[in-house]
Image (cartoon, rainbow, N blue to C red; front, side, top):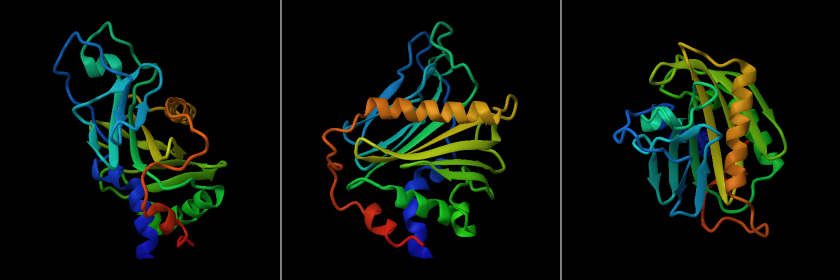
Length: 226
């Protein structure tokens, strides 16, 4: 079970470690925030859906992983003339490189494990006890709906996640509303889908080649999932 948990820790560890993310106050009021950022030594682009921009103060970048936080462009930049998101939400993306392509059976294994007590515990944003409300696998994407005690910055208890591969990386995107104005299920689903589509569009597959990084343990560990 410890080995099984390790692969999901690779997938969700950045998210749990950062507590689901939280927006920082802008430093350059009047500037325009960026809708995208290059990570993994500039080999991968994380792009937000329309109206959402990168909070660079909350974002963490490393050569082999990244945790990117998005908020409404106007909120991030402090510029009232900047773009605004249609729905109040905090978006996060955790990215790790993968060696090769994950297939449908890999995501089926993830669903099975996340439905166990040990697996569902990895879904928590800020150390609270999570509840997996729904999990479905669609081709090479995993769709999750869960809730916990609530993330940082007044985030609501319910949140939406999608796991997929793009441009040689395994990506986990999360959408969290706010307790003061929570998202409906349809709004959350639509927003997490738009987020995933933005990232896929920014990282088109090239000739079906695997990731540039070799020796990544995700592929090996997935084989051990029940």
